[in-house]
Length: 250
Image (cartoon, rainbow, N blue to C red; front, top):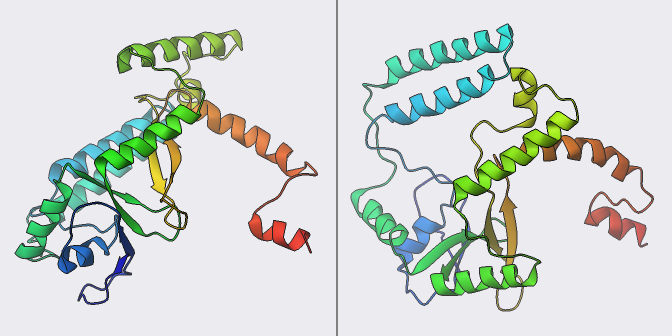
């Protein structure tokens, strides 16, 4: 375990756990300690990224279908355009020097390691790729899963068909843009799983997290969660958090 204490960048430093076989220099540890959310300034104004992100947001708002949403989306476009006009010619000062850029590139392009977050404390963990994948496979083996060899598009199309069929059975008008947007993702992707490493436990096991954002069932799951949560709170066995559990035990 290593912790950075010597850097001029005004950010909260994170603890770095190097569980890999790769030897890291002190300077590399210092850079990793800036955290996985540390944003490196781009070399030039990210014009395409701004336009793409803004347009994706506007299109998702417009899918609601009413006049207010369409007007709001256009207001966002106008606002973004004004900001782009102000920023497109600006000079961007880098927050890392040439040596630091080189070190960051060396770490991030190394295919033998994986840099990931810890389960608690916002620490950074470096694992050998093979070890990380082995821990991931352990999680899969423990669950009731089966391998699906079909292409992602085929799976998404089948899920979409099942959802639309069930929603129509429930008399939901999917021809109405507002209703369609409420229940279905416009650009669905398959859920993905990653690990948070438990640095406080022996052998640093992983805790599996499934990111379901924009999964075909994502919006329907949100609706069901909003329905079920109030019912769960009313249950006698409901516990809000571990602190409440500790208090109830006394």
